[in-house]
Image 1 (tube, rainbow, N blue to C red):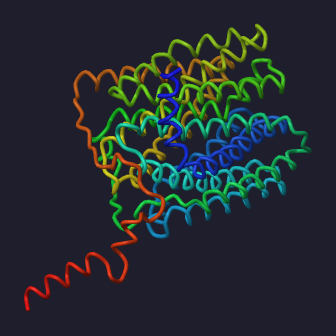
Image 2 (tube, one colour):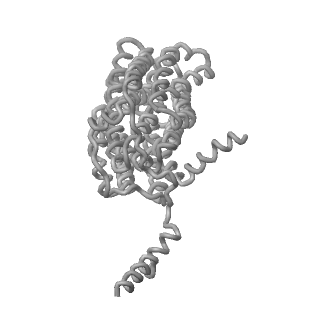
Image 3 (cartoon, rainbow, N blue to C red):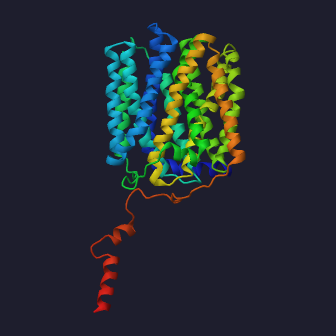
Length: 431
């Protein structure tokens, strides 16, 4: 019991000041996950080929790439809260435009702009969050952030069961959820990072700092992008019903969510590169077998999806934590942009390749591609763990930052402050 309490206390101490942050993140993820799965199923219903579906949905992540290259300038100019509110408001409006036309090219353009908006919003959230962490708790904080995102994504999958004529009701619901997500972030008392000390960082510099973290983000993009965009389609091609498809997606995301906190805590205690290598190895072994367990009832289906999700979704937060261990606060916005860009590049490439393989070689290649990508990453990570040492940078304060001015701050900033008195004493001595 004492061990459980010792585990819960630090988690509660972190969650409490970040509750508004996590609430806004949760609602954002509910909305975009529901929209992605609904679009995948609708395009299949309208007779659009699997490869075209993969291309249209991957344009979402092309928008992510544009966001990672440009939106950090806006964030550094106007601040995190204003930028986040702007991007989510625009996304909320774009969702409703899906109602007016079912043309594949039109939806592709919408997905591109929507990806830009969400990528920019996540850049705000992740760079903000990493300034609140230090090297001793970064894995746990990122794990809590990912738990929030995956919980939201899982709830979004369950909302697929809401009756809707050609997606109209779903589109309206997604827009409403995005609008509500603005409220906790806009009203939070949590201090935002200083925007007048930001420094730029290019991809080559970031790769030299953390090659395993950089490639880990890219590999994560292939896996996560493939799961989100083609998971529902794979489940349908494998013979699952709509309710089972929803269950498959929910349990996969639930597995990723449940793995976050224990793996995040473990990564705070050791070299995160080992954790990444073990995660890739587990995916390499688990993925191909999932296909053969889908016909053994819902319990086995849920267990298989849970294991697949646990391996899929833990790579990105550990990679981000590893990179942020090696940089200071002034580079976090720029680094977050680069990491989002890398994951987005994987999210673009992954669905295109996987959908092509599925169309020509069968649905099982959805899982075979997962195994191949993770196996290649394991070999890459092993090479760098064996032949390269790393130097950690500890620059973020380890004590909690106050969310409002402290009494001593108020005291020394009064007109007749201690500083004024000290200046008066120095002046009187000179005279």
